Structure formats: structure tokens, C-alpha cells
Amino acid sequence: MGIGRKIGLNDDKGVTVAILLALIIVAAVVTGYFAFARTQPTGYSTIYLLDSQKNAADYPVTLIANQNSTFSVYVDVQNHLGGSGNQTYQVLEKITPNLENFPVDVTPTQTYNVSVGNGATWQTQSTVTLNQPGSYSVVYELWHYNYATQAYEFTGDYVILNIQVQS
Image (cartoon, rainbow, N blue to C red; front, top):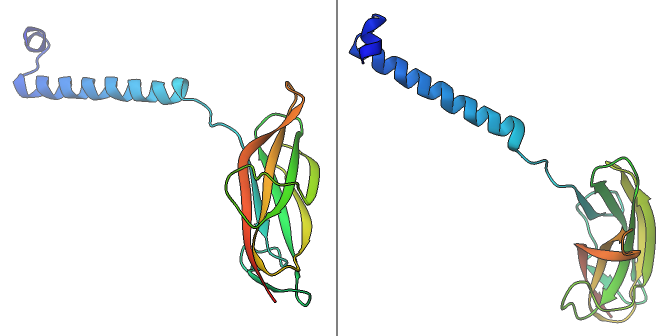
């Protein structure tokens, strides 16, 4: 308070100045943190399905064996990993009556090998025919090529269509 009186501040003005200085210091620390210390968001890849009209709406649910037993969907893969080069992916289509874990432990019915640039989307139409009555899961798994190990690795990304085939 001695310094405040020497420069002409009374007790009320001194408290106000102290609070103002504290707010300026806190604002500077918070601004510095967000400007210098924050981490960049991690990149990601994604896989999704669109119906035959390229909408995320009317997916097939029920098929009739040997009559209406075929359907088509669009499979899309997006690369948001960053960087300037293309990313190599593998999309595995698998059909199983018993969905227990991921990746699904059955032989793929279709394999798509694709290269996708950063920020780009790859799309293909996938046609599936199921003629045996029962409940099925049609799974599309996304695998990423690891250049260090020279092998594809499961990304943990997948999409599932649950289909009922009636006789």
C-alpha cells in the first residue's frame, strides 16, 4: 500500500489495480498455453456405407432367397491422416452368421486395395448375393498398410450390415 499512496492511489483504487493486473497475468498465461503448448489433433481414417442412391438412409435389411437376394451399397474410405502422400488401404468384405469379435475371423468374400490422398475419399460399389435363409452380418473392415512392417494392420474401423434372408 505504501507504493500505491506514493503514486496517488487510495485503498479502493489499489485493490482495483491489483485485480486488473492479476487478470492480465492470467489471460497472458492462458493465451500462451493455447498459442504454444497445445497439441495438434491426431489424424484418422474412416470407412462408411451409403445406400444404392448414395445416401446414408435405406440400407437393405431383408432379402428373399433366390428371388430378391442381391443388394448393392457404396463403400467409402476417407483419409485424414495428414501428410502429402497417399495412404494405402485394404477393405475386406466378410460375411458371417456368427459375429463375435473384430477383425472377423472368416475368409473375405471381396478385397479392395486402394490408395487415398490426404483429405480425399475413395468410393466403390459393392454387390452382395445371399441365397441361404438365415441371419448374416456383412462386415467391411478397414486395414492400413504399415510400411515399416511391410504388412496390413487392422485400423479398428469397420461397418456392419445386418441382413435377414427369408425363404
